[in-house]
Image (tube, rainbow, N blue to C red):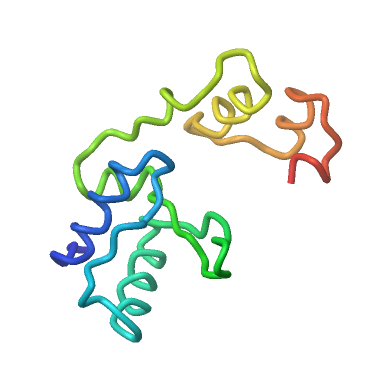
Length: 116
């Protein structure tokens, strides 16, 4: 799928954001046009819902595929604290074969519902 200029602009802005969030929207991108752009980015796997902001809107973060789409290597490693369970989970998930729930439970000692 080819990126539009607007999609490229949003992904580049998210790549520069400290939490890798889509936060810098052009003032002309509103309503249905904004929803259309976000839907296309989500369907391509370039963004994922991250959390809800204080005003109740959903915040979206750029994915590794989103970084690939704009030709920038993701900087995931810089946000990890070595030796933490979070870092362990990220390492498992970054493996080419991914990680099963069982793998994550064994690596962290957490219960399955906590890993989920």
